[in-house]
Amino acid sequence: AKQTGPGKLRFFDPAMQANASARAALEEDIRAGMALDQFMLFFQPQVCDGRITGAEVLLRWRHGDDGFVSPDQFISTAEQSNLILPLGNWVLHQACKQLAIWAQHEDTATLSLSVNVSPRQFKQDNFVQQVLTALASTGAPAQRLKLELTESVLLENVDQAIMRMSQLKEYGVGFSLDDFGTGYSSLSYLQRLPLCQLKIDRSFVRDLSSNPNDASIVRTIVGLGLSLGLEVVAEGVETALQVDYLRQCGCHIWQGYFIGKPQPLGEFEQMLRNKHRA
Ligand code: C2E
Ligand code: CA
Ligand code: CA
Ligand code: CA
Image (tube, rainbow, N blue to C red; front, side, top):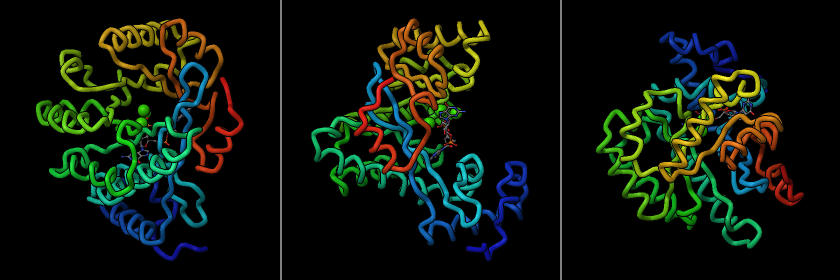
């Protein structure tokens, strides 16, 4: 189908998203995309000790002629407008629906889903309520839901963040610190936050086989996380060498193209049925 609006791919350029009128056009397109049900979830497998234990949920926009548009091309615009609120809430509900379905079958009952939460979503006054509503209205088991947050939003108002996280933690919801190592790295806050996981940013994993600095950063982050009693997850794992090194460091949980790209639900479930091992 031809796009009627002004939002062809040229508006998805991140540089263009800084431009007010281009951003307004993209906003219109996002709104239309939501009305047309063009958004969908992809699932990227996560493995622990070689077994698929769940997935990270990654948003995709099925945009007419342009195929699947990656969130890098629209999330920041959605974040700057309020569109991230309905969009993020939709993602949360879809993920919870899936968890509720999986919970009914023995083979899938222990799978977990990690959902990215945008700063604006987390800062909403009714954030806790929205998560609880998503869980209650779908019947999803809270212990299977992980919410991924970045450092900046947690450090902006640490006490408020701790309060929100603690409230949800009581229900069993876990929190993962995404892109760890790229932000402010306020280590003193790290132990105060009720986290269950650290995710090592892909940028450190990428070159760890060739760059000794990255290799030692990864080793350090794994040691730090484990010593704080957290799970440590590596993202962007693409090679067997990386898996071996991570395992040596004590990191047994990872995701990346080496096990699987983000994929539609059907493909992810097929992978589960094939009992894929890595
Ligand atoms: P992220 O949370 O850091 O997600 C990881 C990104 O790395 C994903 O990009 C994923 O496709 C990519 N990736 C995973 N494994 C590999 C690998 O082995 N090699 C390489 N080269 N890349 C890999 P994606 O799906 O384009 O998402 C980009 C970002 O958009 C995410 O970064 C996340 O910050 C944001 N995002 C995605 N979905 C949502 C959402 O539902 N809500 C919000 N607020 N943000 C989202
Ligand atoms: Ca993430
Ligand atoms: Ca990440
Ligand atoms: Ca990242």
